[in-house]
Length: 277
DNA sequence: AGGAACGTAACG
DNA sequence: CGTTACGTTCCT
Image (cartoon, rainbow, N blue to C red):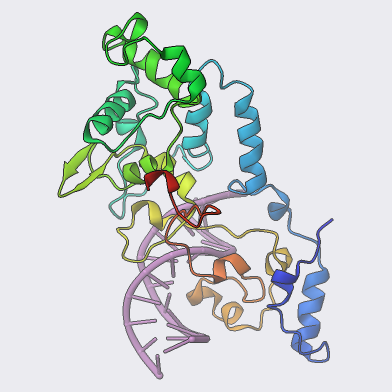
């Protein structure tokens, strides 16, 4: 079922099976995968793709497609009361743009961004033809008044001439208030909760905590993750009470790496956000 | 740099 | 509430 991947296997001690430690490691390797690790990882690519596929079936009629992508899973939003031992981010319900009864927050934010020049709408020829001759602001139909803003804006998220611009989300992710434009920076809070998913699980020491402090999870697929049972002899096992660390033979390869500082998109051109150039 | 200790998130 | 284990800090 599982394939040994060289990228993970190369980190093992390949000095030879003769040493007792290596024999133990091999024994652990041969043990079955723990049941908890057989579950699809909630943040895994496959799970993400599954969700995306599911959402794509029903995205046509509502904002649920985008909304589902931007919201953490229900499992990540535990219903129990958070232990507020440290300052945490405000509860999403206070500032949830997508749950806004009218959806005006997002529309308003987009409008303000457009005014500030941070957001540009780039119509495709097809859409351009479709809207040609119509006024973009306060035009005919539903977009005339404030409440029509939603009807206008949300479909745009799914259509071709309002691309979900990661650059926009990058701006949003750094915001402190609903929309701030002081000191040359601009951001929108509230979407940050969803952007966190897009940015990946990251931890940035000294990076302000909050979203970045969320714990990463073991990948469940690398060789150490597939091991069951602790060696009981490594430093982590010996100091389990005080060390609070997993057996070093079971430490996920991904978690051994330094957490990324953020979600980075690299395009063939090498530019992070070519549309911002 | 690596390990130990600790805080605490996540989960059962 | 107990357990597990990730993230951070401190120490060597």
